[in-house]
Length: 93
Image (tube, rainbow, N blue to C red; front, side, top):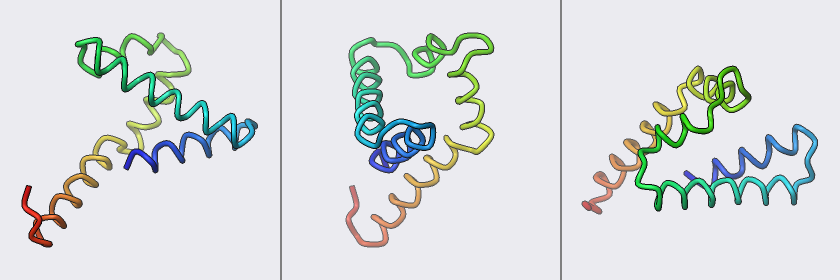
């Protein structure tokens, strides 16, 4: 799932005018930095999100777009579908 997200971030960067190489590097670094901070900060991801969402800023605009398009529900549905398929295949965790 994460590879699709990285690819989508990189594609968005290209759409906005970045070269493919730079866009992919920025996408990778964004995920690496966010994952590391989430891992070591001891803060809930919602707290970390709130810290980077300035009032009327660009990040909250992007978050709003993700929410309008059911990002969290879509991710949760993908996990549920993968889990269901794992159960069907008999690979019970």
